[in-house]
Length: 181
Ligand code: HQG
Image (cartoon, rainbow, N blue to C red):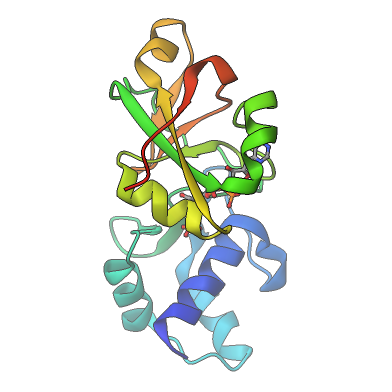
């Protein structure tokens, strides 16, 4: 099983559908790694502790995290199931970016950025990253988020272990178009 497929399967069970394995997540999203490995093997997937450790360590977006003794694993962000990552509110940089598909812009300029099925709206630190995120959905458009003003007005921001900025909702007044580069 190649590492991309393992990563996609881990995203599925740790962020969206633990019931497909099935595996139990604790309230902070942690799952027992031995149990995951055993159940994946039973489904015929070729994984073991060292393969999972290398998927976690080498993952392009650092999507997963192992706990200190490598017994448990969780996704750093991106959940659609109700997980409390227990992140502390953080002061955001002046600006953040959100890459989206151009066809969503009219709706976004009406309702602001909404979290949809995920637990948070996901924001990127830079335009290059936001462009990659937006391109997943089609022709990308990059929006600039006035995070500084939002923060001053009491909106709460979090930053995940893998440096994705998270917030509940971005109203239209804090959005403007950024140059796509
Ligand atoms: C859009 C990936 C219409 C939003 C990435 C996005 C990220 C609206 C789509 C993470 C809207 C939801 C999340 C509105 C927002 N009207 N469309 N009012 N408000 N949208 O995949 O941010 O590879 O749930 O712009 O790197 O694209 O999975 O969110 O286009 O960090 O690790 O609704 O997923 O990480 O799409 O991506 P998504 P996202 P991974």
